[in-house]
Image (cartoon, rainbow, N blue to C red; front, side, top):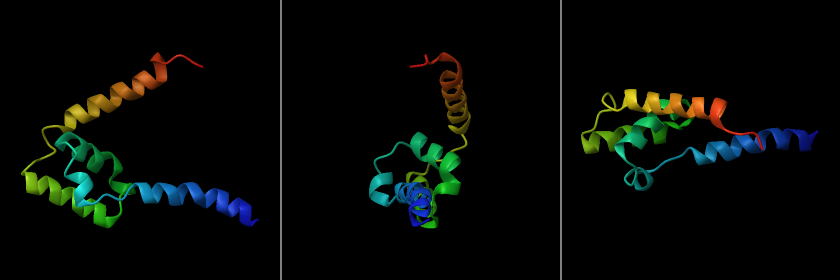
Length: 89
């Protein structure tokens, strides 16, 4: 029983650790990447990371409004590519 619980919780704990961003990581990211992170991963980011992303965008005087349509097009193209253009192994 413990093994089953550990197997279920391990990926969730690993994922939670991956979605924590600090100012040192965010400062090297492009505005596009920050906006993509904020738009698609907001629910997965902890409160500190959400605040850090918002603060980094504010520090740069950037707004996601201009790049959001491109982010959505890129995501749609990626999903289409994954669904229809990749060969099976």
